Length: 269
Image 1: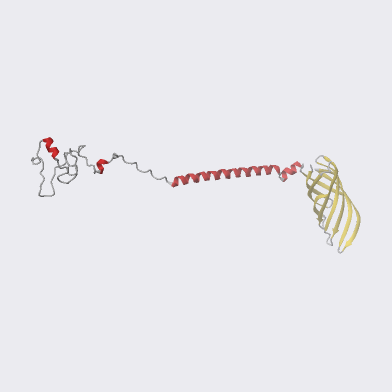
Image 2: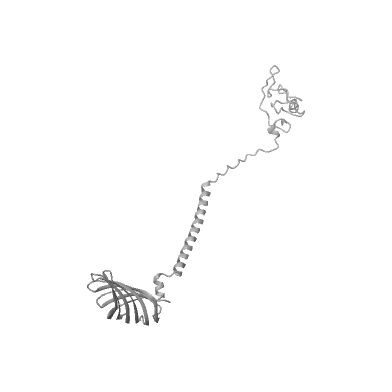
């Protein structure tokens, strides 16, 4: 059976066209109604277009097999998908990475600094300072006076305008160094009576509570009025008794046969 209005093929028991809603003869028979019933809109045979009433609620016989919306086996899901998560900000991750790198660099730098401090402390301990070394060698200062008691000329010769004198002299020390000394000296006297001299002294004395002999060299200058000054230092570097390992240097000054001395001395270990 076909719909009288739109021509849609209908099942034999259909009461209305699912496409246009026009009632079928089956609906008239069951309801004892006529297509010319005033409550049912008539179909104009002279017009291809028919005005139809609103379609009744669909029934299992009125389903349109060609309506894809009615035939869809999948229920319509009205659940809205959640909005997408905002993208992660790369700045936060970069900050974390930079912080980790900075921490590692600080740890490395701290370790290097600590190692350098430790090495410096070890080197300071291992290599003694001069004061520490001198203390280990019993460093001490000796000050006092000396007096020349006698002088014996050995020779004199002319060297241009200068006269060269060789002689020996004896004297005594007092103060931190006590004892007697014998010196062998050479003096070059200039025409103005100034002179340069040098010699070797052997002291039989006591120094820092130790006794023996100590040999040292000296050199100096003198003026026409007889004042002099000079310095002493290790000469032969040898001695006897408790002064065998005594070393040092110093200065002296005076006039005529009297003078003062100041020496920095130490004993080898």
